[in-house]
Each structure stands twice: as structure tokens, then as C-alpha cells.
Image 1 (cartoon, rainbow, N blue to C red):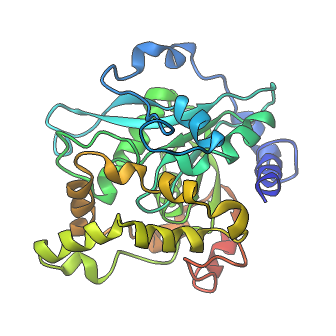
Image 2 (cartoon, one colour; image 1 turned 30 degrees about the vertical axis):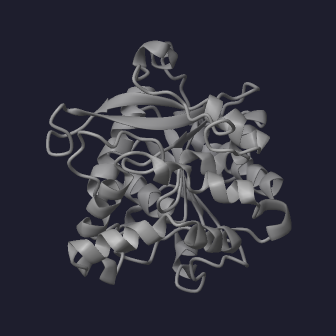
Amino acid sequence: MICRISISLFLLLTGSAISLAFNQHVKPIKSAFTTTQLYSTAFAPPDTKNTYDVNEVACAEAASRMRRVDVPVSSSISESGSAGISYIHWPAETKTNTLPLILVHGFDSSCLEFRRLGPELAALGISTYAVDLLGWGFSQLDDINDFSADAKIEALKSFWKTVGDNAPVCVGGASLGGASAIEFASNPESPAKAAIMIDAQGFTDGIGPPSLLPPFLARLGVKVLKSEGLRESANQMSYFDKEEFATNDALKVGRIHCLQDGWEDAQLSFIKSGGFYPTKKVKDVKQKTLVLWGRQDGILDGKTNVPLVSL
């Protein structure tokens, strides 16, 4: 399955008929944006094996690549004017005339979601950045006042300006990450020249009743959200080949970020904000777009999102 997705992305981004139009936009990213001087010195990549007892090699290799960079944000998000965004970069292993790719994870997940796909794409010559949305993954949680959808998108845009020099890029999102990709791509000034929607939340707005809960009930719900029982349920729903991929290690990988100090408050902030509202912005995604949908998706209703094929 991973190889099939990688080939589909590769065809979108390279010399196929759908991607020929992108080649004129490709330009090298300035070398200054690949140096360690941008990295947050206060951040240490998670030691997934020794600290979190995850034996999966792909996870350990991805985590070892994780970095955090301080990006400019509005003072309403952080009084310091910056926020730390964590990400994993897999540089292209071969030289191709290909757009770099930003991959955005789903609801309350992390960039480790792409731990298997990232190396596959890099091997095909695609420089791939898996990025944590502000408030999720291993992004900065302390001294941040706003973890709303708007804050997440502002930080995502600022990430690419900081790390990618705002160069032409392809943006891809999985599940709720698809809503983020729609927000990113639909802006008239977006650097995105292509988009990829992977079982994307394109026609589901908001987070529903949880945003109306009183604080004590909302916090209780958040505690349930990080419980092993709920995460195991999501683990089973996330994979078609459950025996191969819905492992105990996969369960742990999906929970690691929930154990970071400040995660509960960040989640409550997002819930209170109401979430993403991508439906009205789908029409504004003018870029060439690849829509991938798994027939066995157990989380999002494919029928609701069928209109995505009109992008």
C-alpha cells in the first residue's frame, strides 16, 4: 500500500501529464534554510525506544530526524512572537525536477504518522517534510495562548516561509490534515502549486457538540481521548491490514505526543475554538490536486467527501 501511494505522489509531482505544469515552479530552496542555526536548542527528539518502549525501527529512524524550528507568529498566539514547530525532513535521494512536499498529519496525531511513507518518497526523489500542527505532535505547548485552527494554519504557513523560503511546494494532508491542506492551498498567496488529499476531511466542518461542553466535561473527554482504550480503537480503524500494521507499537506511537506536558490544555483550546471549516474553501483550491481514498476507511465517510474529486 505504501508503495502504491508513493508512486501516485511521484506521478503527480514529476513528469506525468498531471504534473508537467508544476516543473516551471520548481526552484532550489536556499541553503541557509537547511542549517542547524534555525533549530530550537531547547528541543530534543523523542527517544521512542528507551523512553516510550517502542521497538519499531521505522519509528526510531523517523524520530531521530525530528527537529523543531522557531517560526514567527502573531502575538495573540504567543506573546514572544514565535512558536516551535516540529517536523521530520527526508531529503530527496535522487535529483529530480520535483516540487518539495509538505505532509500534514490527521487529528491529534504527529509527524510520526508518515514514518513509513517519508523514506519511500525520498527514495523517489521527493524532498519530503512531515510537519506537526501547532498544539499536536511535538510542537511547542508552553507559552502558547491559542491552538485554534487559525493558529495552526498561521504557524504552518510560517513554517514553510522559515524552512522552505516560501518556495513553490506541494501540500498534502491526511484526514483532518486534509482540511489544513485545503486552508493552506486555498489562500490566493499560497506557495502551493499542487495538492494531495489523502482520505481528507474536506466536507466536514467543525468538531460538533464537544465544542459546547462545559470546561470540566471537556477536560474529562480529553483525558479519555488519550486513553489506551480509545487509541487502540483508533489504531484498529486506521489500518486495513491490521495484523501487519495495527500493532502494539503503532498504538504507542499514536499516544506519545499525548504524554507531553501541556497537551491537555492545547487540546482544550482547539476544542473550544470549534475546529476547521474547510467546506467553503474547497472551491478555492485551484491547484492540480490528487485525491486518494481508501475503500476501507473506517474513520471518515467516503460518500460525504466524494465531491473532492471535483477539485
